Length: 301
Image 1: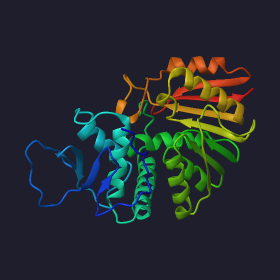
Image 2: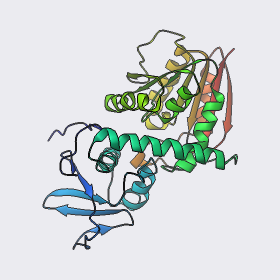
Image 3: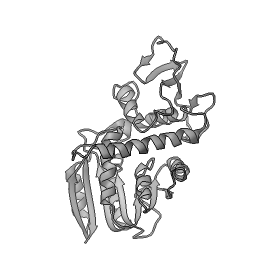
């Protein structure tokens, strides 16, 4: 059976999100543990007939991108749920059922996340060498590192997802285009950016085939993207980034022992892979470093 793609701005009926794969709804305070259910600190996983149902105890003031870590730790790492698509559907359902209107729910999600990223970046100056998964305190220094590496006024981000990095770079006064293969995510970012007083252009495309001319941006960012792609596809994206960048390409990856399935990681990118990509980029100077993950910076020679 074919199911509809995720619609992040779909209206929620009766405080219940249904997409043909999973039902998500708030957990009532008086809900007792049901036979066959799984209860964690934030979620109940139950079956209502043949439907998979996830109930949650999060409110509008609590929902931010740490939700990824909660879902991973409580439902996906233990094996109660599997797969990146289901992860994304549950994630979307939890956010949407925190308010009556989708725009209100997502604006709170973005506001809470951006505030937490800023606070975490200020509070953690440590030069860590690994990147965690799904926790704002772990990826805040990744964003800070990427921002520090931007050169020039115009920036193109490949694989922007929710676009938190794009929003932060744009708030610094740069002209930013965010791109992603998910049209729904780009529509969401396009709807949210004006609410935060920044201008971010959005583009839906495969990062290996971006419909922009050569040298379209001073800096091209590919931060926590390449681990989501097969190695050959990732190499194509890097070549495309070099075509699009006038001055600099910035690549950031998590350094994992094994890829995180729930986050859609297909392989564990190594520092060796970054060095090989850097060596293959003719006409570019390459530098590979570690800082809360692995980094490859290419500058035009």
